[in-house]
Amino acid sequence: MAPLCLSCCPWRQHGEPLLPRAQPRVEPMNLGSRMRSDSETSATRRIQALIEESSSVLNRGLGALKSSHHIQPEQGGTWCSPAAFLLILGVLITFPSAISLEIYYFSLTEETFLKPDPQSRSNGLARVVAMPLTCAAVNFLIVHIRKTTFWWDRNDARCCCCDPLALWPMFLAVLVLGRSACLKAINENPADKIAFYIEAVIALVCLKMYYALLDQINAIIKGMANEQDMINKTPPVRKMQGLVRNITRSGRPEKDVVYCFANTNTVPAEVLSYVWWLYYFVGKVSGAGITFVVFMGVSNSVIGHFLLGGIALSAATASGFLFELGPNTLSLFRLSLNKPFYVGDLVTLNINGAMDSPTTSIMGFVENITMMYVVVRNFEMKQTWIPHKSFSGMIIQNWTRRPSKTVLLNIGISCRCPVKKVKQLADFGMRWIQASPEIQQANYRKCHITKVGNGYNIEVIFLPSIGVSHRGIRQKFLVAFMTAGERMQIPFVPLLINQNFCDENCTAPQNSASYVIDSSKFDDLLPDPEDRLPKGVGLGFRQFPEEHANLAEVAAQLVPTGAALGFQAPERANESV
Image 1 (tube, rainbow, N blue to C red):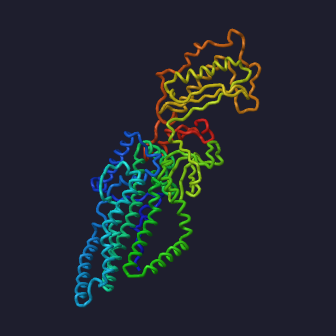
Image 2 (image 1 turned 90 degrees about the vertical axis):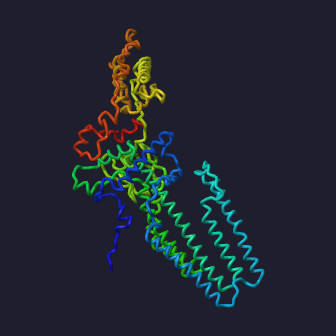
Image 3 (image 1 turned 135 degrees about the vertical axis):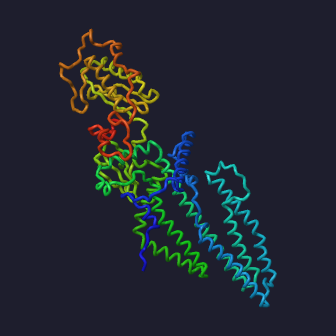
């Protein structure tokens, strides 16, 4: 027995990318490279078109299914293969031969072709006459359904009497009426043979429509994968994926080859295509098997029992696998359709949406998406594998998609401090925020006294401008704010204590000379419009590392603190909401 060859199996070609596969040597100007170049050019054009239309790849719902329209048509196909040539040759030989034999043997008999009964002939001709009306009715119904329910075609200005989707259903209706007319108007012996041939053609038409449906679903899945590959080519996503690739490497090839993923740009739709392949394969084989049974002349009752028995056997033998595969397929479909994150994004996953519960949530970079798991690399550099079954019930918070990090500060002041000084300090904080060109002035800003339960609490909220470091602008504000407090001799106290009262000697003096300082004394603390923070990911991490950079180069660019990744630790995430 010859060994089983798996070289053409999708599971072999598209396995989960844990290990790097040896790539064949490709000539620089071959057809494959030109097709990849065309694909990248097309992706760039589509991204630019979305930017010009002020559109987005998110929040499209079922509109994401239209991405199949952007798939490059495959070169050739089954109909351009030698197998198709043999099929056409067989049709050209079989049909004329069968018709010639039927005519020859029918001429040897004295039997008439049509039934002598006028009523039977009338019934048969009535079915033939009904063919134009039936075709028009089928076309009208399909046009009506398309106009009222195909929302993506409502703005289509094409005006065509015959809808392309109605061609095969009309042909099927003509065949059914023709078969019925033959059985009614033609004698039994030739009628049975003609009906058998028509049934065979009907089976082929049904098989063609069924295969067209499977191919359309397959094209939709490939279209979503193609769209997500396009998203992976955009600079922001590539930067995050390059970051994840570098921080997950140990710098030791013998260790990385067994513990790290070869690629950090896996898309959910591509993984979904691996799962869909099983249904695609079984569906096409089942359709071909049923058509083959029809060609064998098996009765409809036997075919029905065959279908029921096959369904029952499949459910009994593969129920465990399908029950495991079904939730994974649904989860992958949701991820492909809605795009809550991309590989490389920084996310928080939990059950209740709380951001400050490290015991019930996980925060980290999405490292990869496999057929059964979503892999997240947390801040302890642990590789966490979350099953799709559990993942589908989690709340996803995507930190990467924040245009800027909100600065939220709560500053405590002793209750022994004069209230006028606290009010003056809060006013200075608001003046500083309003004078800074590195803060979004059109968005929410706040610097007010909010609580007095444990002393005075000044709450500060503002949003840095796009590209301005969250930590840098927060540090500039705190330095100016605390300097103003020192000049006013305001006693600051921590908030997280039961009694935040300062000592008597630390209380701000209340004599008339220094009770309240003139606001002009703080003008030197206001932000300088020319003193801008450097734009980038953060003060300690200016830019993302290049792809394929080794660990030493990455570490040289990182600060040696817990915020080395350019993000805050999970327990401090609530300060940057």
